[in-house]
Length: 96
Length: 241
Ligand SMILES: Nc1nc2c(ncn2[C@@H]2O[C@H](COP(=O)(O)OP(=O)(O)O)[C@@H](O)[C@H]2O)c(=O)[nH]1
Ligand SMILES: [Mg+2]
Image 1 (cartoon, rainbow over the protein chains, first blue to last red):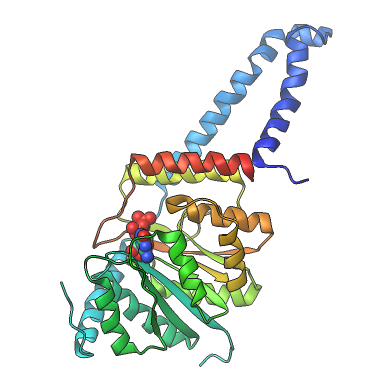
Image 2 (image 1 turned 90 degrees about the vertical axis):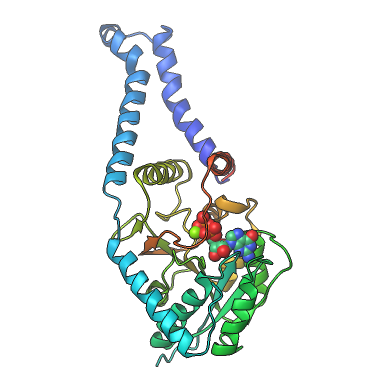
């Protein structure tokens, strides 16, 4: 069976959430886990903030680097003039 | 002159494009004429009140019925069905879809054709978001919305193409028919769903960077309702594909 995008996301979230919940609820215990308890508890929040920051910077970067294409607009303007002239010569009557 | 036996049917849906139609036709004839490929232009006008169809008829007189094919419909039935209507009458083995508002420049069509022929792609899609592609006439807000929507759709839908909402593309005819048949959405998001369905069907997609010059004549629509519709359809596709 082919997974939908939603199912794929749920799978990843599940793979993260199950061990995470096992640790924070104390089902899973180990000295190393106790030592890093606060960090582990904050992990989802940290990941979310990191992902948000990544997304915002990618989108902003791409917005600022979006090509403006002034030459393409200029070329089109010139071609519109050429086209109008040539079409009139071919007997076309513009209705504007 | 080209030795290829292929024929390219260019679908031009029009609604209130009387200023743009003569220019776009002139440009298509110029660039395809120079390239030597066999082609036809199918104009699907949906009863435009500004007389676009009369303009089309005048152009047909100049360029001939082989080159300009008119397949008008009585009323504004929407873009998705306009393509279906156009395909039915297409005699080419490849279909090119583009807007008639001059935002899609015909100079890119020969590049689409070359890339398709070289790699045998099922679809070649114009992209504003990579390489030398870009947009003229958009302010910061419009660019931000566009980049944001594109980023979100890339993450949620994993398409094999960088420009999901663009509508300047070349398809193998049977590929286009299959993609359209499996599409459920209409309107603005239809183009996005087409590439998502293409991924599902396992079709290959090539990309050509295009410069998009936003329409000079007439009006375009991107308002609150379009954004809400986009979000709804994005989530729908996310959950089902
Ligand atoms: N036949 C037909 N063409 C349409 C309809 N709506 C839009 N078009 C055409 O489809 C193309 C894209 O429309 P446009 O308003 O530029 O959409 P935008 O670029 O997404 O804002 C243009 O060539 C329009 O003339 C419709 O209902 N029927
Ligand atoms: Mg447009």
